[in-house]
Amino acid sequence: MEPNVCAAQILIDAPIERVWAVMMDLAAYPEWNPFVVQVDVLDGAVEVGGRLRLHVSMQGSRATAVEEISRVQPPTQGAADFTYELRGLMHTLGVVRARRLQRLVAVSETQT
Image 1 (cartoon, rainbow, N blue to C red):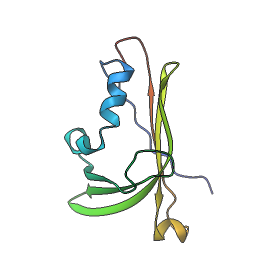
Image 2: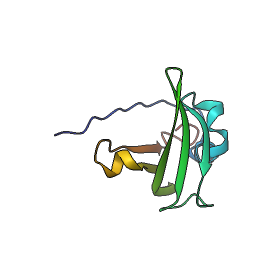
Image 3: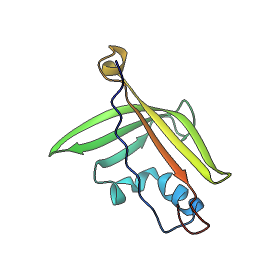
């Protein structure tokens, strides 16, 4: 069975380092991501193996999900990645497998 993939992209008028800084400011996610109400860093650091609790709002309903960070690659050679994966009962039972990949690519010195 092929996994379902949802993807979106946008051109941002800012250098990749600035976009990375905004993306890694997890407390500020609700300012730019209407899906995320709050992000809690559960293990004290944003690093591979660390966990996040996402408080999300979908169609008027709120939910929480624990995610494990699987990749933190700051900008190098014009690209950066921040990836985290769903954990918890739904993952353990194999009902839902989800990976969220946020990839940045520098288009120029002033656009990402």
